[in-house]
Amino acid sequence: MSLRPLPVLLDAAIGAAFQAGREIMEVYGGTFTVDHKADRSPLTEADRRAHAVIEQALRATALPVLSEEGVQVPWTARSMWTHYWLVDPLDGTREFVKRNGEFSVNIALMEQAPRSASPEGAAAPVAGVIYAPVDDLLYFGWKGGGAYRQEQAATREALPAYERAAMSARLPLNAPRTAYTVLASRSHRNERTEAFIREVEAREGEVVLASRGSALKFGSMAEGVADVYPRFGPTMEWDTAAGQVICAEAGRKVTDVATGQPLRYNKHELVNPAFIVH
Image (tube, rainbow, N blue to C red):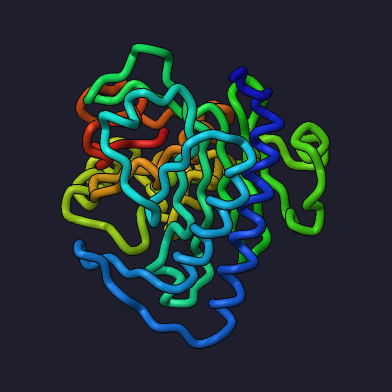
């Protein structure tokens, strides 16, 4: 089966993200209970409903879906995939529970060359969507096609990617800053992050600290409103893949702290190493 063009597949991802956003907002507008997974991370009905509609919407692409809330596929099976969807149906569930609006739907199209699978990861994102349903704000991009930011995005739901891009702000934006800006996690800041901030302050002098929840931090970095985003706490592959391709198309890098290379995907274990976006 030949792969459809990236913008066409991106259309499917954007449509799926909008559907998930509607499900999320329906739950968000009412009362909901919070369950917890084995790792104590929160889980709500919004996570489950968003996963269900995304999985259904992407079925038409005939590509496998690897989702945080789906069946976890063993690496022996995943290693055979050349293309697949990597999905976080509701990234920032803690922000959702706090009702601060800083959560997102993340969908990335992943590519792995045939016979190149490795337990250390040999896949990379080639298209990505980050959608913030509270603000109806969409970040999207595809390899070689650029990265974009669109407000009131779901009101233009039927647009194809090329036309949507023409109606969106291309990233990075012209965002002048008076001081070096470090973007840090709102819910996951640890001692290693604090030490990194102190190192930056010693090197740069005046430093401004900014916070934003979920994968929306990748959107901020792609916009150019901050200089660096360090992440030393645990993340999973579906947390970062969409943001990585959007940032890359905006001229940013998402690098493994240990190797200095771009984050790798479809690893035997789906946990990311520490990384820096810069």
